[in-house]
Image (tube, rainbow, N blue to C red; front, side, top):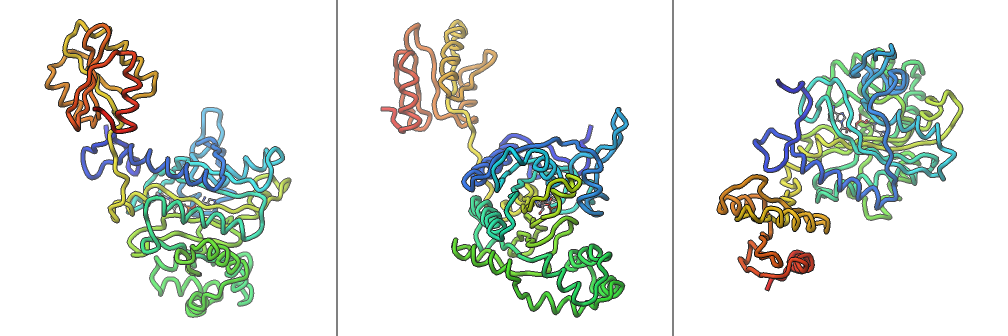
Length: 421
Ligand code: HAM
C-alpha cells in the first residue's frame, strides 16, 4: 500500500534514505517554535482539523478554495480539512474574546491540507507555525510579529545572508489602484495578478493588467519606486531599534494571495532565491467581523511559517538540527535469572526520569553491548548481586560497582557532571 501523493511518513533517525522525512527533526523544529513563541509571550491555542466548508469559502479567497479537501459528512454537513488556521483563530477569538485581555497574542502548530499541484516546497499536507495578535491596530503589532519571525529563523542559525523579509502593504497597493482609476469590484483580481507577477510571463501579466485598466509598466514603476508608507516606515523604525534592519526590505512585489489582508503584508524568502516563500502574513482587520457576522470588530495581524520549505532550506545550508539518540542508559541482562531484579531497577531508573533501554528477550551479551552503542547510550548498567549494580561509562570504559539504592545519585553525577571515577 502506497501513501497518498503529497503526504509524508515521518521516520525515526537514523533515516532509511535521503527522501524520508525525520520525525526527530520535526520534534526539534517544533520545540524551537514553541520556545521562540514563548520568549515573545505568545500563548498556545489549537482548533479542529475539520471545519464547516463555509468558514473557508467566504474568507480565504479563490486560490485556497480551489485547493480544499472537502466532502459531505455522514450528517450531510459540508465540511473541509483546514487549509489554513487564520479563519479558525478568528472564529475562536470572536467567540471568546471577552475572556482575554487585549492584545491577544496566540500561536499554534496545526497540520494543514491543501490539494495543491505537487512541486518543490509544496505538498498536500504540511505543518505551519501560526502567530497572531488581536486587538492592536498599531504597526507596533506588525513589527512584533516580524521580529518574532526573524528570531524563529535565527533560532536555526540562519542569518541575514540566508533570508530576507520582503515587506509590503495592501494599503499602498489599494491607493495605487484607486488613484489610477481601478474598479473597486476588480481589486482582488488586481491583487491576484500582482501576487503572480514574478511567476508569470510578462506578456500574460500585461494582458491581465490591461483588462483591469493598467499597464505592466505602470505596475513595474510603482514597485521600483518602493516608497514606504507611514505604517511601513513605523515597522522599519521599530525593527531598527531591535537591530534587525538587515533582515527586512520594502518590496511591493509582495501583496499576498489570500483575500482577507488589509494593511502591512510580508513574506520571508531565501536570499539566494532557490525556494518558495518560507513564511507569509500580514494585517487582516476585517476578518473577525466577517466570521462573527459583524458582531465583533477586532483588528488582527499574523503570519505563518511552513515546515516544508524550512527543512529544505536548512538542508541546503547544512543547518539541519543534529539528532542524537535519546537513550541514556542500556541495562545489560547477561543472566536471565536476574531479569526480575533488572526490571525492578529499570522501573526505578525510569521513575527517576532516565531514558532506559534493555533486551526484551534473551540475546547474547556482545549483541547487547553492540545495541547499547548503536543507540548512543552513555552508560550500561547491570545487576551484580541482590544489593549492588555495576555502572559502565561507554566513553571512558570505566566501571564502578555500587549499592542499587545509590544508582540514581551516581547517574546524576556521571551524566550531568561528567564524572565517573
Ligand atoms: P500562506 O502564505 O498560504 O499563509 O502559508 C504560509 C506558509 O505556509 C508558506 O509561506 C509556506 O511556507 C507554507 N505553505 C503553504 N502552503 C504549503 C504547501 N502546500 N506545502 C508546504 N508548505 C506550504 C497562510 O496560510 C496564512 N493563513 C498565514 C497567516 C496567519 N496570515 C495571518 N495569520
